[in-house]
Image (tube, rainbow, N blue to C red; front, side, top):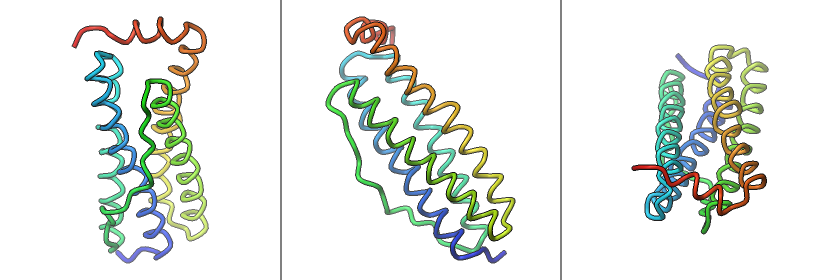
Length: 158
C-alpha cells in the first residue's frame, strides 16, 4: 500500500531517534557494567530491547507503506561520563522522541492515516510512561538520596 510521503519521511525520522537511543543506551550500559552498577546495567539492557522493538515496528510500517527504512542515520549521541549525566542525557533523548512522536501523530491525523497514528500511540505510551518516567525517577532519587547512596543502591548482583 502506498503511504503518504510525509508520513514515510516522518517515520524515518522517528526511526533515527529509536536507533540513536539504542546506540546511546548501549554505550551507557557498557559503563554501568564496567563500574559495577548491575541494576542500572540490567535496566538499560531492557530499555535497549524496547527501543529495538520500537525500531522494528517503525521499519515494518515503513515497508508496509512502500517506503525504504533509513537505517544509517543517527542523531548526535550524548554519551555521559558519569551516572547523573548519562541518565540526564538519556532523558533528554526520550523527551526529544516524545516531541517527535506527538508531531508525527498530528501529521498522521492530518492525512487520515489513523493506523500509523495508533502504532505511534503505543510507542508514545512506552516512551512517556515507562522510559521517561523511569529516568525522571532515577534523577529524583539521586537528588533525594544523594549520589553516593543512590549509586550504592544500584550495585546489586550481576
